[in-house]
Image 1 (tube, helix red, strand yellow):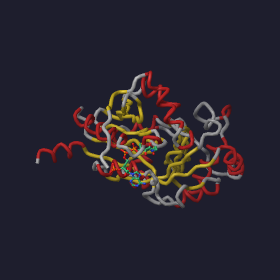
Image 2: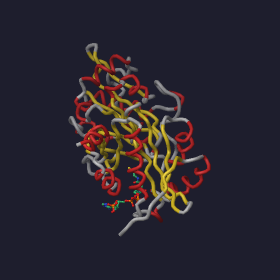
Image 3: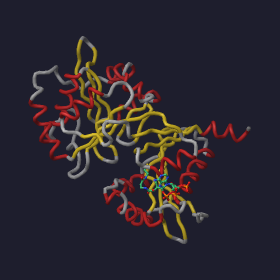
Image 4: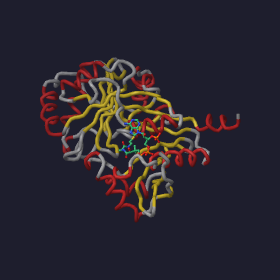
Length: 319
Ligand SMILES: CC(C)(COP(=O)(O)OP(=O)(O)OC[C@H]1O[C@@H](n2cnc3c(N)ncnc32)[C@H](O)[C@@H]1OP(=O)(O)O)[C@@H](O)C(=O)NCCC(=O)NCCS
């Protein structure tokens, strides 16, 4: 079937109501885009693009410049009434071409295993899988209940500390989990190349909890408030120490937190955990299961990071 053509242009403030309306029809209205669209348009170093047909915006996407030469693609959405008519592909192709012609060397995105349309479109454009994670989640209320119990049962463990940046860096540099995720650290559903800028990577986490043993960190837990809500983005180390860190983190209260302000997540918002599938995720998964978290895909990898070298693409076009 011949697909129709679309006009791609930068989004404007006046597009927000239409973007919010599209978003409201996706994932039963649980999409995070309405919470961040203002920020995407105004504050972040990036751009929102829309696909328009006959004057109607039917799809949009966000390009976020993680680095001057690395663009993060996210928030691809097409109004369900217009899906399958080429708007998503047109946006993706435009985005890649625009990034390439702006001198960006790499484009990256993450997606869930069941996002068949995205995988089909972006895979067809040459993106290849870089690393895999296992996502877990649970609603706030049952989780809080279970984790209070978990925290109560771990009061005997090694002391929970707020680690120094150099200690975290050292831990992460020798981390099998980070090596297993090709050096990318989760920040919710966005991922960040730790070794490009370790300080900036760590700045994403308002909760950094660790235990120390023999002058070194024995376990480390990093959590933050990404744009989709709160997430635990990394946990690794000695099993009992990890159990303690998890219990401590999840039992923290707004007024009694260790390192950061605010409640753990907004009411009703899912609280997600990203565990790198590389290394050995079994200990972390077992502790999280004890704490009431559930994997989405039976414990198998289900969140994938894809990247595309735009240099290679430019080189190929010169062949
Ligand atoms: C992903 C999304 C933006 C795609 O938008 P779209 O406008 O429907 O995309 P297009 O019509 O350009 O292309 C869809 C392509 O995916 C293919 N596709 C759709 N469903 C598929 C499936 N279940 N399995 C394999 N391919 C599939 C179509 O055949 C089409 O391929 P083609 O261009 O080779 O013919 C849209 O499905 C969407 O909004 N999904 C919900 C939000 C989401 O998951 N966003 C991505 C987050 S990473």
